Length: 330
Image (cartoon, rainbow, N blue to C red; front, side, top):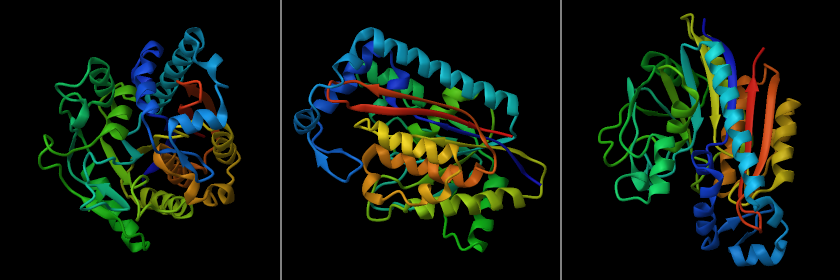
């Protein structure tokens, strides 16, 4: 019988692949962003956000403050990698979201599991010809080139079959046919590149957090997590399984109150609070919080042993990412 031995959650922001001095490149993108979402459901441009909030985060973008946060985040990632190494899993289930890397608007499943024998990353905007800082981000995502990594085919197929019998209509993805055109992206490459210290087969879970009209609700994501837990535990072979949430929390506007609400609910195993997060609060990058909610549904029979949170601001209006790092284990 398979045994879930570890749960992890981590932000996968490009900022984690850059030095604090390079965060300015992401800030320049924010200045032109006309669709900055807030958790109250509103959307605005950067000038509108600055008018609303004022330059209240100016002190947070001082070089020494940003450098301290950069170092703290890298130390947090090291702690997650340490935990994964200690757990010695036979397979890692990565719960992430696809952002037009493997799927397109022509065919976008709400929830899918890859059950091939090998994943392949694609390059997208991070490949040849990209600016140096984007190539650096791509290296952290295994996307500046095409990479391949082993996947746990038999285990993934069993998970799909179990979920179907539990009335979860999961899409099944069996191959990456041409990674020069489409393949796995940042949510998966970041985990393998940054947290794995040895080769471990993976099972990618692909949750559509970003693209309406078929984004699952928080309630549904938590429920799928519970049923995925059952599917894992039903597997007859003696496997040690780790489950990792990739992405989140709030971005591209840092909202510390929202992030703390999620963190408190996870730490307190507050299922009702996680299930009740409104769809209007989960737009743009913040939608990746759904990856954490699904993962919590899988692993919250274990306590949270470690949680860290850093609001990574990169502009005076407070754009950036709420960076969270979590370890669940008995």
